[in-house]
Length: 402
Image (tube, rainbow, N blue to C red; front, side, top):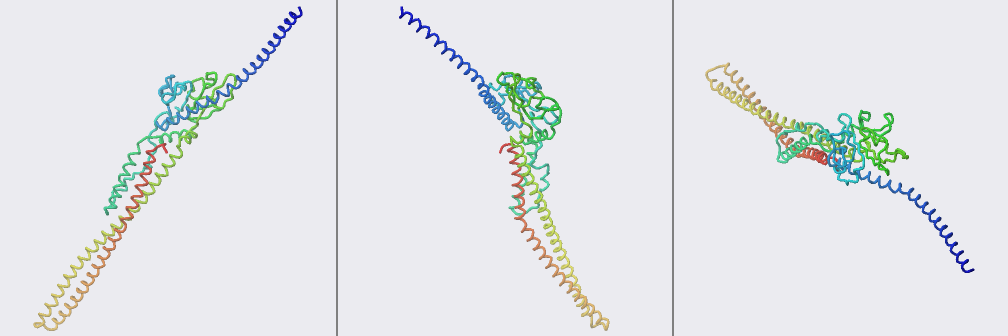
């Protein structure tokens, strides 16, 4: 009997211990569930932000390839829909992303005349700065070195002129900068909660958050406004977003640096062009000096011929006066003296003509030598202009690429 009673007490003690153990396990389970629930959101947020960052990189990479921002997609198929103003989905297929990005909303500025960031820009940027460099040519003929320099300069001018109407990312950067300078234009893309509290942006990316539902302004389609990316989460709002302003986007994709490089190169080409024009004018003056010297030589030659004729006539007159001296008296002596004076004057005139002829020829030789000496400098100046203009063309050809 006592053994049976002992066994009954032992069985009851095991049930109590089991109940206590189960209670402890239950409490631990509750705490574990609460801990996991509390840590689940922080673990998801980095993944959401990582997806937004990937989408941002793809959007800005699209600019480098297509010279514009992508249009939103109308459906989950992920293709651009540039003609539909209600499109608000990320065009994941056009960006080369996976279908998991189809859950993101995407807005891009399509408002403001001439400020649409999802269209190809007109040709604003010109490596010639709008200057007609062809006015530099033709240049007077020179040596073979000058001829080659002139040919190279002509080729560079043609290449630069052909680039004037070619569109690339630099032209789109001009649109982006205009948008940054005109933030108050109506119907442009903005982030904020009201008209009095909003900021213009170039594009916006929005993740629906853990609940998978877009809330606030992010749920309306976002045709002109999305919520601030830093909006405080609450039970009715957990969206995550990235918004990029026009000035920030300009810096991120290198608009400022690339436009600055092109402007510096184009201004360098213009400075070299200005120098070449001055050298060309100087060269033209040297050629003019040669022409004047040649004219002076011709005049000296003519004066020499006239002086020679006058000397011959004077000599003939003197001989005739002497020959007739036997048949004349005092008048003949006077005629001989007069003829002799004329002969002396003619001889003096001939001497002056010979001296002028020598001086004219020396001046022609000096002018010719001076003009020939400037040929290497002309070639150097033209080569500098060609290199500077080619550098501007190369920078324009690269567009937004380094």
